[in-house]
Length: 75
Image 1: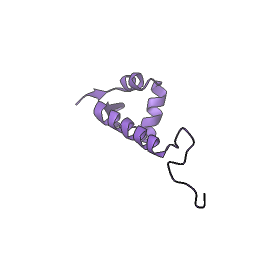
Image 2 (image 1 turned 60 degrees about the vertical axis):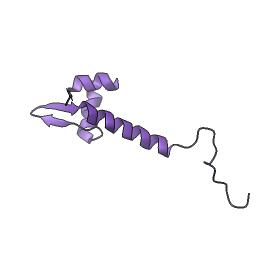
Image 3 (image 1 turned 90 degrees about the vertical axis):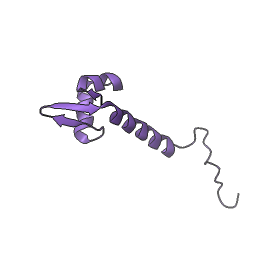
Image 4 (image 1 turned 90 degrees about the horizontal axis):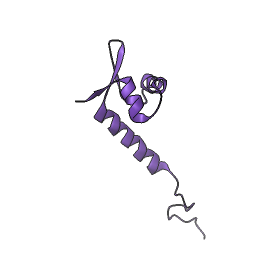
């Protein structure tokens, strides 16, 4: 199991340490406080990001403006 610190997660996600703290406190990324320090399991974090990305892609409208093959009735 590969544990990451706040600094390592910030580098991985290319965001500030403050952003990682905020995301962790809100529960937007999986992490665990160990004493006064946050720790993140690399694979859990990456899996969470993959899942979030897949959910966003599934909910996104087609880029070409089509309705996904469903035509309005009567057309």
